Image (cartoon, rainbow, N blue to C red):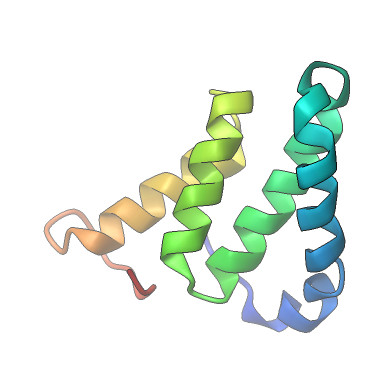
Length: 95
């Protein structure tokens, strides 16, 4: 997974709204599943690009609880875990 840091200002504008949406929609996640997945994907990518690996990984794990085969969640998790283990690959994010 390759992060494009030029997207931070563009994508960062909806961060707070997606966080609030998740808070409001989680109690009705069966009905809101598709939109919750979209909100989590956005937030995972946002924190990944900002190199906030702890938060990106937490959100990726939450995303994978909703959609275990989600490519964004799986890719982010794999990339962060590889960066945490120098023997597995290169990274650059923070833990």
